[in-house]
Amino acid sequence: MKGIIFNVLEDMVVAQCGMSVWNDLLEKHAPKDRVYVSAKSYAESELFSIVQDVAQRLNLPIQDVVKAFGQFLFNGLASRHAGVIEQFENFTSLVMGIHDVIHLEVNKLYHEPSLPHISGQLLPDNHIALRYSSPRRLCFCAEGLLFGAAEHFKQKIQITHDTCMHTGADHCMLIIELQND
Image (cartoon, rainbow, N blue to C red; front, top):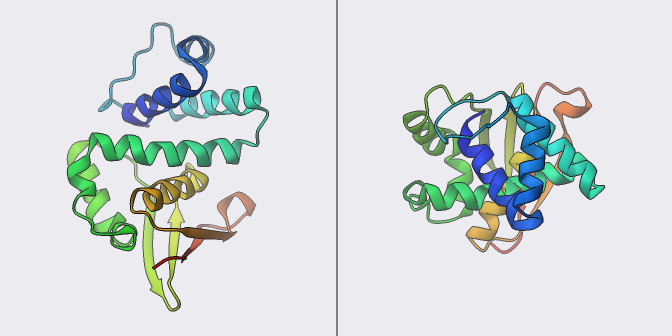
């Protein structure tokens, strides 16, 4: 997992809970004196442990915490890589450009980023089918990222997520309904 993901997680925890909580989480779930550098890779188990602890502290389902982090993550990544986001005129173009534009840019910026497999298909009646597959099974983070992107582009969306890797499927299918297109 790239350090930039941990950097944005730190921003979220500090903004919502304070620096002492972040320091406590690091003390419990990361090697001593850990500092996350955005371009370096770190064990994903550190991220999962921190997120699990946050969910327990907030008494929320982990899926809700991961989704909220995904939404926060979009803004964190967008502010750090504004040039990539500026390539898209709207939410739909961004979603349809995840594989061919965003992941291409990520591969240029970060060594071996271990990206999920994502493909989009435009459907009738203002819907997009987004197929997600990753050994990390961070589909709820992907949902949050989509909500963050929708907010950025002032696009109202609803997501149906009936096919999911967490319930035994080999991929997730996110059906995005564009509500004010």
